[in-house]
Amino acid sequence: MTDSHSAEHCVFCRIARGELPASRVFEDEETLVIMDIQSVNPGHMLVLVKPHRPNIYALEDALAGAVFRTAARMARAAKRAFGCEGVTLFQANEKAGAQTVFHFHIHVLPRWEGDGMELAWPVKNPPREALEEMAARLRGVLAAGD
Image (cartoon, rainbow, N blue to C red; front, top):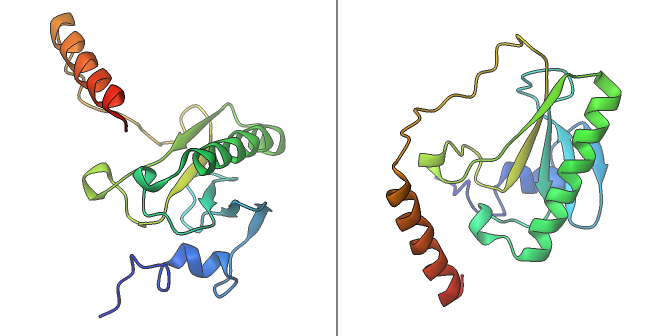
């Protein structure tokens, strides 16, 4: 059994290396943009980081900046090219977070009213005290060095 999570067998690494076909939109030193073969709407793209990084936790700050810069550029391009009414960026990490390909990527989804794509979550509305406690916990982690 092969390890699809390794750079050698990763589908996105293989696309970046030119071993698998993809409809390429844009490429720079750090990122690659391809059309999503499982598109939701016309213009649905995937912004990949070129080096193998399994998820957002593995992105160094410079690479995180590069991939979000490319995502913003692709959102603007989708708006101009397809005349969409909006754009959704979707990015998932780990199985519990709905990640299915374990190589960091961002979906750039052109959107139209009534396009059938729903983003919904069960709102819990925690009390202000709970929000303050969570914020303090996160500040503590950041102060200790992330």
